[in-house]
Amino acid sequence: MKKIVILLLGFSLSLSAQIPAGKKVISSLYVYDLASGKSELILTEKRHFEAPNWSRDGQYLLINAYGKLEKISPKGIKLGELNTGSVDKANNDHGYSFDGKSLYISSAKAEIKEHTSFIYKVSSEGGNPVQLTPLTPSYWHGISPDGKTMVYCAARNGNYDVYAMSSNGGEEIRLTSTEGLDDGPEYAPDGKHIYINSYRSGMMQIWRMKADGSEPEQMTFDAHSNWFAHISPNNQLATIITYMEDQKQAHPFGHQVKLRLLDLKTKAVKDLTDAFYGGQGTINVPSWSPDGKKFAYVRYALEDL
Image 1 (cartoon, rainbow, N blue to C red):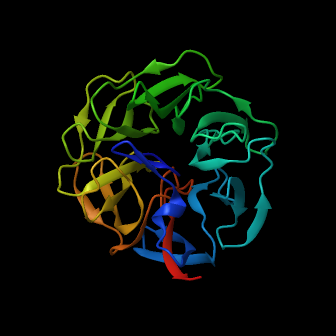
Image 2: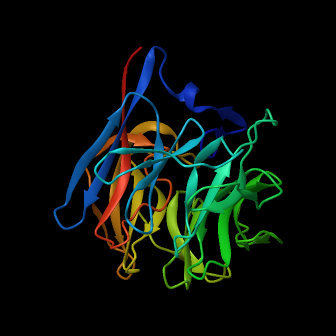
């Protein structure tokens, strides 16, 4: 039950299967300003796109659409596709190293018919990616501040857990081993903690742990399904996406969600948006602006075919 294909109780459900019959998706890219508390619409298109990253130099947003990665200016101007060579089935798990030099992409392989996701590394300027993970499914979510270690969610032996690996590839190190889903691992900017969302309490909540996987600590405690903590550059706050109805271990497309702000010191949570139509693809990956004043996300709507 991950990403483009949702695995739920042993069944797979593609994105197209989640869209009501006779409908098509409209995607709207927003930038939220923390100071004003307002969202600015910068791009709306009658197609499906997902998961904005903000480039480390602040010059553009990176989204995925139909397996390709595209650059969008902060004002919503389309800047074209990023060259990723033979990697052309990217899903919504991608992002940059802290120094902005490298891009990590989760992507399927065309020659494998079953649902897959491998992790690749490429220059942020584009080029020919290098495959890092030999096993599938593997979904990238974070990189250490020193650029040496990446963390990702992977299904091994039927259970999704958090793993670490050298950012150049190598041995896979398991960091969590609880029953149920552990997902969305992301390093704090100081490198001391990795934030995850976990179902270990019987409700999807935000947790953090030391960088070696030790000393897990619960960060949210409410009756909602909370996913994907993205840590602000000043290491004080995190955006999270919250489903208004309990989704168990799934994060499906096309549900009522809202974005909230988690104080990493006090664990207080406050709403940033009203509920809107979104979910999978809205804010899967790190999307803070480099100055920590804004972040990007996607809202969805449906229209008749």
